[in-house]
Length: 490
Image (cartoon, rainbow, N blue to C red):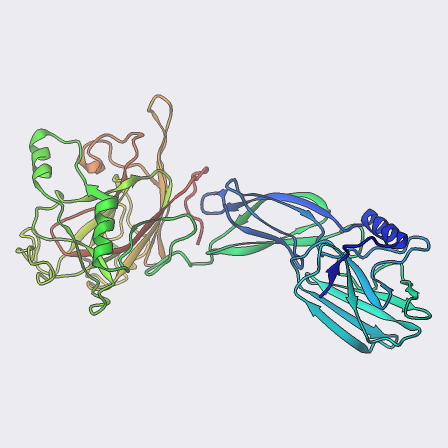
């Protein structure tokens, strides 16, 4: 393997090293990586100068700095009588490296370009390296040395005259083939990547530049629809793929009974009604005990058994999967003695997803064909405000999904509302609400938080309406949406 020089080297080599240092290929770049979903910093992203070993990882503030040599080699020019690197001496090929992180390939070619010898190494040492070669004859050699590392290849003419102790001098003043040229980096690109986000390449035209904000995006439709995986930085509210015990622990740790601010008579009903959300099998995987769901059980009056996520949210991206089961299967929970609420006929299901426990996205059995749209209290609507622009419904017993981006209402320091909320909803991957200005009801239970709309933050709420509705794969990602625009990321 190449070895770093540990003994004193000749004056010639010292001067060559000094001359090389004056012409080192260095760059100094900086910037910041953001997530497009919320324009917030991305920590832990990989940042690398393309084709080199020069890399960095973004910090908590999303910032990075890249400083050093982009190739790992110093292809210095000849200075006066000094040899350019690489050069031959005492039967060895000498070259200088700036990095020890990249594999190195050394090739010796004859004057005609025919390969005489190839040596490959895991890495070069930082500093001067010498490689023992045997391809050239004992006396006189004229040919080329090609050294490749970090994606860059430098082809230099080398020559040795006389006996084995003779000195070989490079006869070219510059690399004959180099990806970036030498001494001054004219242009290149930086590659940025992060798990679950699309990688991005950013060009730079100077070796000392601020690349500014580099915005990474989600893959098209990668975080939307049934089965969607969480994006970077999201928080699981309910999983459903790790078995009943894990799901029960998640329900206990992350959810609570919802009790609104209501009059004493109503409050007594909420207090008496215990949480009847249960853990039940996933109807799509009836024999897989690891696949379970949150089940809105069926033996209470509507509206008194809602559950609320303990985690509160303002601006957010939310994903909820749900299944309207039709008639309730009482065999799954023996304590659910009433198979269907007396409020509804068999086969009819009703529930709802409440953004910030305030704005309901309706879940309701809907038997109309796909050309029909529900009313403002029907399936897929933002209740009492907007009808979905398309009907993306599926039959009872089939899993469905809501993907929601939400910009919370704004309030000033005195608690006065200065801007309404905005909501975008994809229903089973279909855009049905496009950046709707969501006002919410003015007062009372119609506002679903049980009080006038205010600056207090609440968590996501799931409604229990006395029928069998299942939930799974629920997650939330906090956002910081500066403009009144919620249609993004997909």
